Length: 170
Image (tube, rainbow, N blue to C red):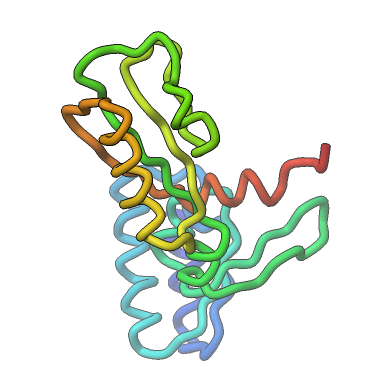
């Protein structure tokens, strides 16, 4: 209830800019959803919302632009879609019909990795890579005589990108 009252107080002045500092920390799921509905409506009316959150999935869903702070220093501010495109990765997984013991020699330099159980081929690539490259890779797998029963891709999330950005340089 305290969170609701604080947000209601902040909104009573119809501000053009609204600062929300961890607004959903410690609230239940129902209240969180209700708060995000209000925030969406405000954004649609043109209110600029500056949100700090540790819930990356909320930032991914709500934000147009993302800022990342590492050890108190703002290291990045970028349009979310551009950030996802420029720093995002995809993982291609091919589910094999028959397990492989080793990767065929013709595929060694392709970047493909064989799963430990030999049942999958994995390939991680940047989202901005040429899509033709993936088609060529799949063709090479076919040329090597490998039969797969399924393939799927997974796009990295904003959380994946965030973790990469804030980890300490090795």
